[in-house]
Image 1 (cartoon, rainbow, N blue to C red):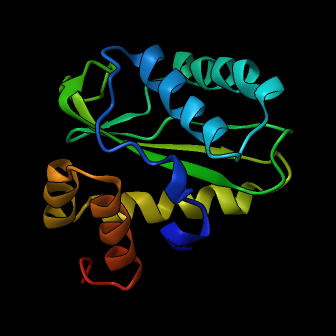
Image 2: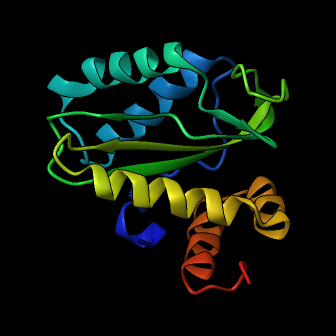
Length: 158
């Protein structure tokens, strides 16, 4: 699975305004709403579902990265977005570090394979230091889209 299979490029945020976990989740879900990828009626429920998942254990996986995610019946296919915080946000990350890179995923409950493949793709790409460094330095949505395309074309992971 590639980023282009699930990342909504219209929803990418190159500079998040949020300063805490719930605000980041809200801002990224809002970006999916504005891009037309989720419905207004489902916005709050999706935010609640992601925050409930965070209560089970932080999706801040370390090295400045978090992958907040949930399964939700309102989406017909896996949808995701990317957000970058140049200052970093306390996300209760496993390594205690602040998080700068966010990959938010919402997937249909009946498609667990897609959800797992997306998580696998994200974690594989994020093991590449160069990819992470460039992503953290991205200043525009276009920069991020280009980086994701390069990652899809295997220009980072050997």
